[in-house]
Image (cartoon, rainbow, N blue to C red; front, side, top):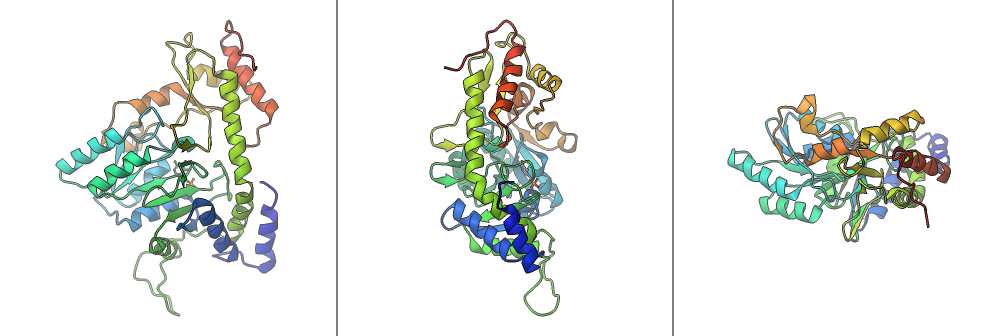
Length: 374
Ligand SMILES: *Cc1c(COP(=O)(O)O)cnc(C)c1O
């Protein structure tokens, strides 16, 4: 927590506005809308997963439909497709951003159309905070007339040019889960430039109660709204978001400086105009160049020092739950899964923590001198 979260939560308690809704929910939505840009509307929800689900419902995804999803992602990107009784069609990543490959996206759309089914939506992801190639994805989507639901769960603060992630599709999703760059303990948001869409999301998220004094429902609703208490935490977190971004980015730069000269290890750099929140710093190890050291060797070396690192997300088409889903790609996601590693990247890491991590990693290459900072 940053500091003023307690002040906002106390406001909720003092006013006895606990849930559902309340002035802090409105305030948090406004904070996010102001941060994300002009003409942006936001509905804060109980989770990022709920935001993906409502986005798909609003796009009219129904049983039997197909939705194009990124193959290399966290399962919560794709699971809501199944909640709707629809089928995810997985598209591989490209190596520049680790996100949805525009070439395989187009191949997938053409093939699904040939098989007689037009995908209802495209769900690209900005993995680890790195923006996907949204210009290309959007122009393919526009060409075939398919809406884009952008999973920016990991990418609050990232952007391309002047535009923030979450505002690059027809709708965007952000998560405030405990592991994300800011947290409300659990929560998410649906973002759109259409006020209608966001009003629809708020209606569906509060059990779809029709206007009027009695309980009347003409749609199936959900209990997906964020509580006023959690929104208070969110308002406090928005104040420290710029600091969090700066720290995550400096952690990435520190790793590059300290480890960037190691043969066979590489970092994911930003394309021109791209800005990553560097939610997690990821590396790739090429064992052909790394003296046989693998990403698993590094993970285990860190574990022996009680330092947690994590494998890259396991591609969806390799998951038992999705083994029969269609997949378009050439195994790039699988290569990244096998060769990559997420390094410790929490905003609260101290410089001493960082030094300890880099020393443990560098020591795996015993006969290789540790690069010295100039
Ligand atoms: C965290 C995450 C989600 C889900 O968000 P929750 O708030 O945890 O439900 C969806 N997609 C991606 C890529 C995520 O990392």
